[in-house]
Structures are given as structure tokens and as C-alpha cells.
Image 1 (spheres, rainbow, N blue to C red):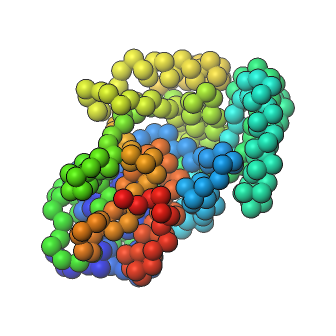
Image 2: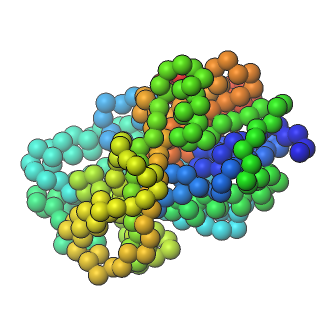
Length: 344
């Protein structure tokens, strides 16, 4: 193969995002993927891009905020290059408040958001109106934030792959052999965390299985909902995604089971408008979770010219624009702007 400036191992969200950004900066890029674009946890259904609560601020929350604020222009650029939609929309989010203590805490967080979110988004307490697309709330109040967004994971990965090709990048499917020369970025999910753990002689992270489902229900312009840990996300393709489980112990990484029935029942209880919506897709996969719970970004210790972008557990799509930026800074320019907590 022709030598390139950067070879990206893995066509999940981090690999695709980093390849796209490096191409935009003028580098020549090749992606090598064993199975398919979005074959691992990046090929899911949910796609909730939601912020951390605006309190107890730290570098991880600040990094995520920057990425969420970058997202509208970043995904618009992907769509323009690809000619297809990634399903991105800054939809906002509603959360029910269950008791007086939760209402008081939400008001405190509204003050924090006014400061920490730089005036670019709001977190506020609103009265429920009884609208069809509102979750039941015992107090009659909801949190409404305008920072949350959504992207359809499968559409987003397909759009990024198309953008990479349109910008002159290579995408090689069906092999897993890295080049012996040049810079290499490893974005290989759970398998990559295992390889890092073995190479460094300590547990870097592992996999957590998740299950999700999609209902046929047209609400593409509605806000996403977050109800007692459950995501309800309306997508541009006329589906509503429901997710997800978190399973540390499992036998089959890609099978679905009765836990999806529980998710479905909880979603209908939270939003009765979904009761008649048919299930059109089920998904299960294993998501890479770093031991630190933060993404693992940086140079692979002891391996000259090799780098890692991994561990985007539950927040990979939300973090992707900023992850791609800092990895391009490091790999192409030698400039390290990665937060200390994201290292090895």
C-alpha cells in the first residue's frame, strides 16, 4: 500500500472522527478496519449527546462541554463533505423531577450552568404542561437543558466514512494488519483496551455490554428524554431509540434478551405515547470502558509513533469532535492539549 501520514486502526466513532479531522488538516490518512464501519459499540441505536451536570466542575466536564459546543458546526461539516446526514440535531432534553429535594437541586444547578456553560446553553426548571411528549413528573416540574443533542450512531458513522472518502482518505475493510512504518492511531475499542492492558502489565479497562431498541414513531423534532437513567431519543429517520442496559457480566456480547422488554416497558410508562409504537430494531454490543471512566488519549507508552484514542464509554459521540481535535494536535503538530486525567 502507498504510505500515508497517518494510519487509523478501527472505524468506530473515535477512529472515523480522528481520520476526518486529520484529513481536514491536510494529512493523508488510511483507515484499516477488520469487520465494518461502526461494527462495534459505535454501531448502536441511542446516540444521546448529553452534558454532565453543571456542578463539581473538572477537566473532563470542561472537555465535554467544549466538544458539545463544537458539535453543530463539526457535524455540519461532516454532512457537507459526505453528502449524507449524520442525523445530528441539538434537540435539548427533558428530565422529570421526583421530589422537592430534586427541584431545589435543579435550581442550584441552573445557577451553575449560567456560569459554567458560558451563556451558550441553558439548564432551567420548567413547569410541566401535560404535552404528549413530556415524561410524567410527580412534582409537576422538569429540567429542560438546551445543550443536549442527538446523533444517529449508524448514520453518523456512515456519514463520517463517506466524508473520509470524499476528502481523499482510504478505507480498507477486512484486514487488521497495521503498517510497519509511519504514524498509527489505535482506536480499536474493547480489543484495544485488552492489548493496552497486556502491553502495560496492568488493567487499563474492559468491556461493558449494552442493549437498546428502536421504535417506529415519528418525533424527529422532539426533545430527548432522560427518565431514571433511561434515554428516550427521537431520531431523524422516524425512530425513537430506547437505551440502555449496562452489563458487566454476560455470555454472548451481541445477543438481546428479556432486559429489552424491561427497557420497553419503562419507556412506555415514562411516555405513554410510545405504547402503540412497534419495535423495529434491537441492538446489543460491548462498549469500551476505561478504568478511569475518562477517554484514554495520547501516545502509546513505549511505542514510537503510535497513539491511542479509546474508552469513550457512553460519551464517545459527544466527545468525538474534541477528541479528534486534540489527537490531530498531538499526532500532526506534536502539541499535547489532552487533559491529564485522560492519559495512561
